[in-house]
Length: 352
Ligand code: IPM
Ligand code: MN
Image 1 (spheres, protein in one colour):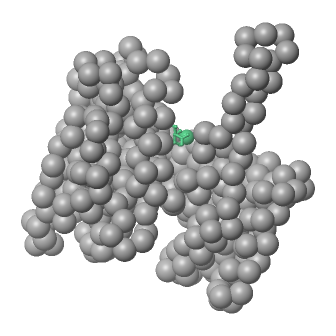
Image 2 (cartoon, protein in one colour):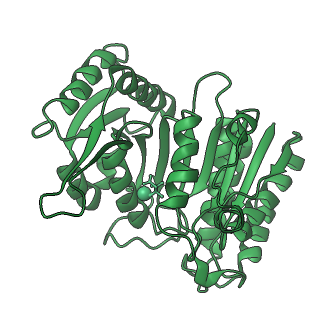
């Protein structure tokens, strides 16, 4: 297994260290080999060279089975440059059309939802990751004048809709929720009567191949209400890129915050290169202090292993995380965990 590692900026390298420490420990237990290759992409490199991804980087990264990403974001780099030049560029060019975001409340982790526990907050969002308003299609007319016009076009293709919906049905089948297999499409068919009509029709067509999965539909605004009021209702959600971006941040909050939220940018096709990351940013103010929470980064490593077929190792890590959050950590907030960043990594290793 060949893994490209982009530790990135700020606290990215610190949390990446812990994820790699856990990888080393689990690989020894489960006897598998891997090879890590570091890449220095991120804000520092951009400030030195003026490039986000150098010439040939995509071709090089394509040779890897997976990419592990720490965090990118630098206080001296204008917002948007690294996001577009690195993160979105990689997602699009590597055709990572699935953004997989498990919303799992680990034991012992505080949720802002009163009366809800780990048995209630346990679902997965499958966010489309290559279409919608993220395509960068649009432009200005009469820019900077009082008559200015701006367009930002949402693109949906039959092919793009079909592959994400099919992935979501397959995922729901595989997840095999004992409470029942249910896939909820989240969109806005009452207003977006062209694009989301295509999504809706595609959902209906693909659903015929999965009669064992209960199908459901929520408008995105209603979904935001249910995620707060009845999160236990959800098993798997499939949604568009923009709506997925928004509801997964809501999801991150109900699962206990950015310290625990992990995600994958997946190209499930044979030979595809997927990329795993923690959802939190580079947290510049905590850099180098050994106080940032590495749980999300470690959970992202578990997702990488799961996707690479090392299912048992992935489960081993997830169970160890639950033990550590449930019986050791005082909080998931940076500096208030009761342990340092590296101590949390050690605890996960000890509990594998
Ligand atoms: C995410 C992030 C990105 C997105 C940003 C950094 C471009 O918010 O992964 O959810 O909007 O997809
Ligand atoms: Mn986001």
